[in-house]
Amino acid sequence: MNSTNGSRVHPRYEVAVIGAGFGGIGAGVALRRAGIENFVIIDKWPKVGGTWLANTYPGVAVDVPSPVYNFSFQPRSRWSRFFAPGNEIQRYAEEVVDRQGLRAKLRLGKGTVRGAFDEADDLWRLTLDDGSEVTARFVIGAVGGLEQPNTPPIPGIDEYTGTIMHSSRWDHDYDYRGQRVAVIGTGATALQAIPELAKDVARLCVYQRRAIWIGPKPDFAMGPVLNGVLAFAPLQKTVRLVGNIGVNAGLGAGLAVSNYPRLTSVGLTLGETALKGFLFTQVRDPELRRKLTPDYRLGCKRPSISNDYFKTFTRPHVDLVTERIERFTRTGIVSADGVEREFDMAVCATGFKVMEKGYTPPYPIYGRDGIELGAFWDENRFQAYQGVSVPGFPNSFLITGPYGYAPGSYIPLIESTAAHAARVITETRRRGATRAEVRQEPHDRYFARMDKRAKRTHLFTQGCVTSNTYYINYQGDGAAFRPSTQLEMYWENRHFPLDDYRYTGGVSAAAPRSRHRGRARPRTAAAAPDAAR
Ligand code: NAP
Image (tube, rainbow, N blue to C red; front, side, top):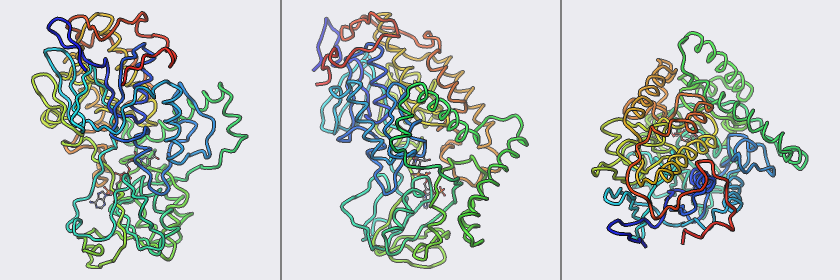
């Protein structure tokens, strides 16, 4: 319930975080570390974990080494494998929530359907799917960039009478063992699911539109000895640091800004040769190898790793179809060569809506003067200062916004953008203000710098023309990534001038001023008032 003081309405919460995945959890921890306790974390799912709760398809696993894929403030040294399965990562999210004192802040099973900034009172009004309203001085949007399933608009798909599911909405009630199964898509998700499905189904048919670059996966059981060694804190920190640099280099190399395109091309050719060599060791049939070799250059799309994906196609009951899908029938799929195949189940491993109008953000958000964020981005191109804030949308921050994600593990991104939001909120408190809005000029400078860099990456060269990469959006911009190192992302989010924001409004009664300036020590869970209920 809101309270009033004089003529101004005061929000129920100081901060509302939307999303209880790794982004929302990281934001919650950043807030507590800044001494901010009156916040709520809202999520449509009944548990925390975000992508690791939503994605439960067979074979789901992290493709960043587990000792690297964890928060700096809560490393874990109990992994079953070097690349842990998805449910283990979800359990880790639960552990973080408990240890960091976030459990009482959660409001789960409530989807946000609308957000609007109330200019009279400098607060956000969020409408939830049960019709209730949450008011908060600040909002942190942590809904993730790969969240809205892309269901392919294939003719006839609605008439198909078999079981159909998107990879991120797996129906575990359906028993696919012994069935005839189709998989549409060959991205990072499909390459994990295909080998697992092939173990149990009668027939597997994979519809590939484009091949994907794949390297070997150095996966192994961790066991007590390795986990024990990793529990030694200095070693753990070193492994995280070196691992993050490695993942940053591995995923970022193809996106590196280059003034030397020839040199880039030579580097990419070396990488491609190595990956083709790996494919050669897996598949003997030259025709199958040709089909599994991408026709675009390494780095145009996110490459991945697997030890059993290629070999699965050499099994007698597995087919790779490279003809375009023409349509679904009631019982199967017809490809462009006229061949109809019947299936009991079809899996759409067809990815997500990334930086698309109507999906990013996934619900309408109205800022100053009633401007809606999706419409604003559609008209003015996707943009956000440091990937976090947009002029016209005061007191609002994004964890994975446009030009925010420097390729690598998502964890350093989350920690960087959450730190950015916590810095601005702390500064707003310190100044006794109620509104913080990024200034136009620093925002424009950042946008121009990132846009210029993005257009100088390999992504915009001839070699990527056929890749259909989601790194480039429908506006022709490389907005889904930040063309920088993760080090730059880390540094700039923690050190941008606080005057890049304009602070206005009166003293907030909802926010008792912190005794700590920006770098407050974390409070214990016991000391935190139960503000979320
Ligand atoms: P994706 O990389 O976007 O791949 C989607 C696949 O579906 C592509 O092969 C695409 O073909 C195909 N496709 C889409 N629409 C189609 C249509 N209408 N007809 C036929 N084929 C169609 O999606 P994803 O595999 O789900 O991966 C998304 C992202 O999730 C990855 O890039 C990665 O960042 C993340 N991920 C991470 C992990 C992890 O372990 N951490 C695991 C899985 C995924 P085209 O290539 O021709 O477009």
